[in-house]
Length: 601
Picture 1 (cartoon, one colour):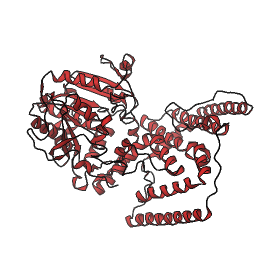
Picture 2: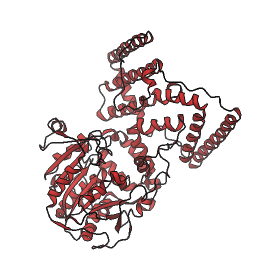
Picture 3: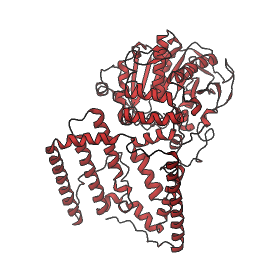
Picture 4: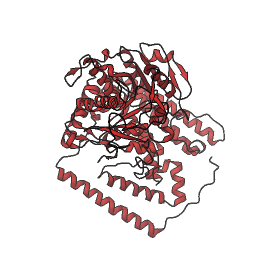
């Protein structure tokens, strides 16, 4: 049993409780009325199955019923598991020490409270849930006869269902919530209802969970603080050049192309973990593309435009500003997909000599096994999304953010449901979540092309499968020295899928695998490294073969990359370059104007 002193229950003040409930009821009624009014004015019924989930589960049910032996065996396995759990629990009640039948994974933070282990009742809730969820997932995963995409979709949405049923998500089965409720006389639940209504109001009737106080940080003051200047601007991006901190710098400058679905300052969150500041300290002249937050006026901007007005314009501007003939490129995530396309384009135009080397951060170019994101992209879902985008000219930033949140629902959805609505607390001020919430929109024409050609049809890996600005692309023609860094727990760009690029590029390729995920594995400052990395000089045919012979290293991968980049760039050093003092004049102070544009969700 839990020996911790239990809080003395408090009875809520009747008048205060009555007043709060009345206010909540009034706000709820008004919110529902507004929501129904907007639907009636729009004249469009709500979508019944926008994710096209029903068809996948229908196929799963048909195949499952065709194999009743599998169902029987699965149920027998569950029955045996519960017999073990009941026997185990009975022994604990009699005072015996017993090992748990099942335990949560090391990365499962839902059951961190001591009561989940020390209290027999909550321990039973926890193990019962874990056994049942394992049974559900194994039953679904064991269904034969489904095509790969349908099986993946069924598995993904089953996991969403299982995560939602966790006992940690409910008042009466969460010990921490129960203790808080008793200690506060239920004030946490009243505050939680208020938080829920505020989020519904902010989302115009749709739940928009607040993960961060929008006023917790200020761009240019708390985050994105590396000093520099905007030295170039067009419709789609501003190019920033940052102040040097060394007397001399590597002759070949560095141009970073971040993803356009988020803002560049993931690489400049704070001084202590800023990749941009660190690269400058190593003697690199750093430029970064800061993408615009597009509105309906840019609805017709295409993937071609993003290439021509993005990396190609940035390369040209950086060369002029630094007075050089070529640059080193970095592409992050889909910014890397765009950079790979750009290199294929420049190669076909016989103009790739202006790129000295390229580095890809967590970048996919082969989308055959795109991971969980592929669940959201099929013909039915894409047609529905295109209809929405073309009505307003762009994809709302919040819609993409919601998709990413579903990939890690326990961390990015249910933890906030517990904190905000059950515990009645405000979100903790966290710079990474502030950046995550500072989303950007995407022009309809560009985003539709990207989803169809890359995710749905996987055309980028086919010679001539994608044509940009009148040029058919072939990634196999790329011979630029390449450094690929991927992360082992990446849920957005699975590392085994990113590894496939090593079999495409014809130039020298170094593949490095970092620990952790899509963000943390990349933003891993050497001063406080949390994760190691793996290297293997051999160019293995498959990702598994590469990893089996790889060498693990402690610390951050950043110094390894810096050594590689300086080797590609040569020993020439030149006096440090001040932004705005070279071939292009300063237009504004960093972090610029485009980064300040907020998404309107």
